[in-house]
Image (cartoon, rainbow, N blue to C red; front, side, top):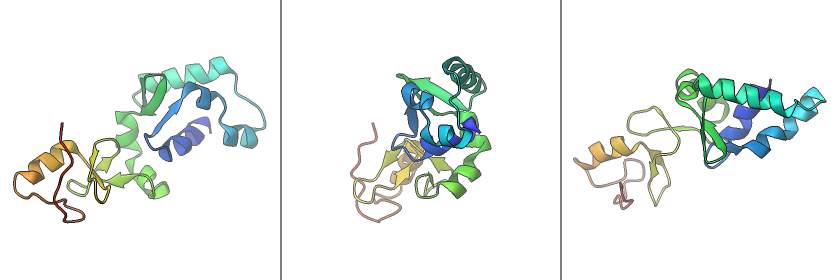
Length: 134
């Protein structure tokens, strides 16, 4: 149940990440379970899921890892469709790559690089692509 609540909270964040402090205080979890998980138990669970590739840790935050994106892509897109989108070019989940400054649609950097070799407009809104690719 903790895993599901953690994913639910991460999916609606702008950067799809959550701090350790937020993990210790998941409000919806404590309301559901009616008790707090011990801090050490939470740390052990998160470390296990990081080792398994479900999450990655960077700068005191946890983000979706490669295994999460492969195994749970359809679940994320179905249950969090307002937040989790597909790249308009390759149709795979895109979270952090690059977005058009006009329509804010996210695409993979490599996908847009290839696309811009043929065309100069955003594949979504059709306006001139002006976002730097560095």
